[in-house]
Length: 430
Image (cartoon, rainbow, N blue to C red; front, top):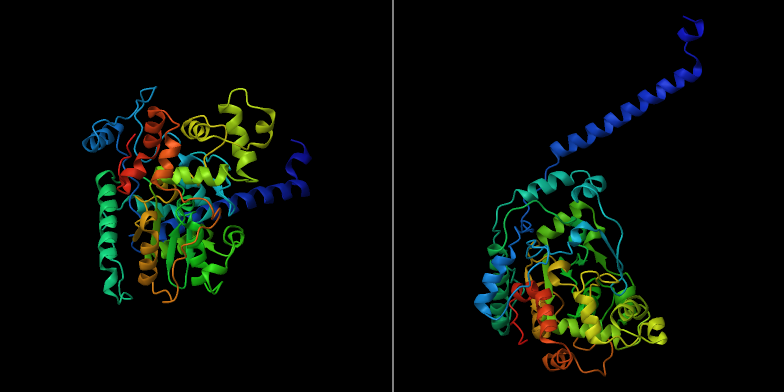
């Protein structure tokens, strides 16, 4: 044995200390995470429904056929059974980064392994939270609305309608749901929910359902503006004055979901789709024309002219529908025509108030009474943009649908059928 083999040089001493130091640090971090998982306690979770045990197409077929014998669900070409809520696109496998601008959602990456891993990395204790979440028993009771601020009998009919909507949604989710491990990233699930802390309100934004005016109302409630009528469109959508629920830590999300009044406003899916098309493609738009228009024209318009290919203007409704129904879209989905079931998760988040665009002003003003808003604050009824255009209604929708084949109209209904069922909208005449 050489003398050099038995003597620890300074270099060897340094490397040994470094290796043992790193090993000790890793052990400490592991024990810290384990300790917090064992001892982190959360209060009763009563705001989220368990992730549905998705009903099969056969279940859905049986349910819908009772309402409309002519309706049928197209078979999966590969023979795979898809479920009702988590469809073939499965957004839960891609984390979406949502911008405050007009629906600029981007897929930013695919998590490996279970979706909850990312949450565990971001917030210690999340694993415990999801364990409690998955152990909940269905059904959760409908939380009674706090009506202590209601002093006027004129809201009696509106209140009865509201209770029927809440009960219908609850029963729908109860019938087609069961206990299952959550598959959605929690922060994605609440990413469309705006927070108003003073009156303890959570509002889930559904575009083309009066969301611009709702944001104006939230700004007034927050004390950011004296009147909803003095706030510009750009201030509403690009000002970043309002907080979203996903900006809080896990405890902040948990507390607000448990204690705040949660509201969602919906609209007839076909009418909402046509409204979105008219807004984004029939008027100059510096985002939707170059991003969506160019891709749609390139793929769905044979022999398109150079000008249309370059600027993306002039998309036809039929081309837009082909894009919507294409499982290999040239550009991703957008919040303005995404399903409500994938924007606000109504069978996962137990909403206290379900408003409808068809009775928007009445529902909105009743909701403002429920939360104790100032008496002088009323929901604005003006059209946010393109005020000279006729509002999209059933008659306008029929004009757009007449250019489609019966099969195309049926496929649009298939695409939105969960929203139709969940919110009790009448099946359209196809």
